[in-house]
Image (cartoon, rainbow, N blue to C red; front, side):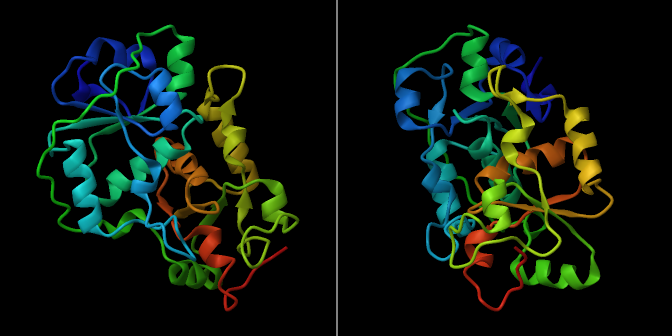
Length: 272
């Protein structure tokens, strides 16, 4: 299988034969200590903070295009590059990177199912030496606004009931029992489906059967008939739910302001 044939969600066995292809860029978004122990041959480590704006109250927002141009030039991205992303948590950071690539208009990408855990479970080759990328001069001309949604757009959608809101956090955050921002709770009408519920914890942190996930979401009221806004606290965990919704063929946008923005803005409505 060539990289041109790679699906959005890629299995480790599909990546192995393509490891030496010249147009392939493998990005490891796991912890640096994990990377230094074992990573996929040729993988470049990316510090996750480089994919975030990093300023309060919403540190998970997208960095400006100038900062992204520097990042992707350093990583050696070109328009022809096929990017494969993975992490060591089952996919939240890798999924976020898929969203970042959508934001810059680069759609040649794949998400490695299960990340390094699934890769190791399959006994595929690893290395521990640090890989330095061949730099490029990649310029992000504009940000694709269709990949994201703002708090103003969500607020408007609440009145019109024009959007499904997928909250990927845990139940204590959603209910307001655990307060991480100034206020606890959730966006009115938001549906809770915790991101880890989609993972097979006994099987290399792979995604569970997607049809099963789909039926669980439909039962909760997220069925793809409306645009979906997915979020968590800083749009890390909702990186995984973003990829799942894309794979299901649903119109999904990331609310990258997430609860860190919504919960810290006293003018916005909440439910507990």
